[in-house]
Every structure is written in structure tokens, then in C-alpha cells.
Length: 247
Image (cartoon, rainbow, N blue to C red; front, side, top):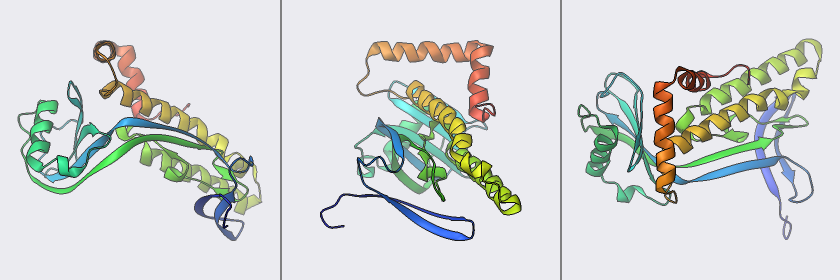
């Protein structure tokens, strides 16, 4: 490959009794998938901590200083997140600063510092590869699409892909029918793009854009008030959050 640019998409799959790993495609040759992508000007700092949840509810917080999230893993373990600058590192976030910022943004006095088991900073990104198949090569989960974690859709989409592919493979082995295999991308991408839209919308609604202005801030506050006062708006959010089957 010396002197020749190439893109390699690596996936492990099995169809028709043959195992296939990877696909080479030369840029600009019209071979291979098209990638739709968006990056965000902030990241998430996440911790897993030995501290009882401060609330029985999942908390999404929009604050002047940025987004925060509170979730429960067990009666003794909590997972918490903070919006941080895209170029931040963990060196800039000693444990006392993390806990102070969480209590401030979540407005939860019951949140107590505890031993931090895991900590890291994750960039926010949206990505979709189309199509999700090429011949006997099939992409699933993060190999095919990535969503910002705000919408809590990553694992759900991966499992949905595997369900569609499993049914298609079962049909192939039962009757040699390729119909579901040939429609794999079509069947998956409708759900993928609905989840991508919802996740991008939730991310834009709940995060302070470093390049934004006071007008953007007021628009977000207005829509958040609309969600908590309108049954129609709340239903739309809930329907998308738990999964919209007719996507």
C-alpha cells in the first residue's frame, strides 16, 4: 500500500458459512459507505462513585455553567456526568472540584462525595454510515452509528441492529431467502436516524454552547418550560426517549 491512500473498515461477520473481516476502499472511488458526522464543542466528564444516589429519579440538569446528569447504578453506586470543555483533561478536575460542580449544577444537597471508582472524559459525537452493509459485510452498533449519550440510545440501537441481523440470518439459513439480508440497512437506518435526531436535539437543548449567545440560552429555557407545562411536548419527549417503534 506504499504511496496509495486507503480506508479500511474492519468488521467481523459470518454469512453463508463464510467468515469475512474488513473491507478496503480507495477514497474518491465511489466504493464503500458514506459517513455523515457531527462533532460537538464540549465533552462529558463521567464518574462512577461509591455514593448512594441523591434521588430515586434520573436527573437531567441544564445550568448556566453547563449540563449535568445524575443516575443510579445500585443503592450504593451512582454514575454522574458534567459538561466540560472539549479540550479539558482530568488534570483540570480534581475530585473536590468535581463534587462541588455536581452539587451546584444538580442542586442536590443530598449528594455526598464518595470514592470515585472510574473517571474519564468522553467527546460528544454523532455519526452514521450508509449503507450499513456491503455484499456479505454487515455493520452493527458503534461500527455503523454513534450517538451522543444524552439520548441514552447507543446500546438500544446496537441491540436493535443485532435483532434485525439475527432475523435476516435465520431466514437465510431456513429458506435461503436474502430478502431480509438485502434490506438490512433499510430496516435499521429508519430507527437509527430517528434516534440520531432525538439524541442531537436533546444534546442541543441541554448543553451550553461555548460559542452561543444569550438568545440561545433564552430559547432553551423557553422550550424546557414548554416541556414541563405541555402534555403534548412531554409525550413527544417520552415517546422518543423510550423508543419510537414506527420510526
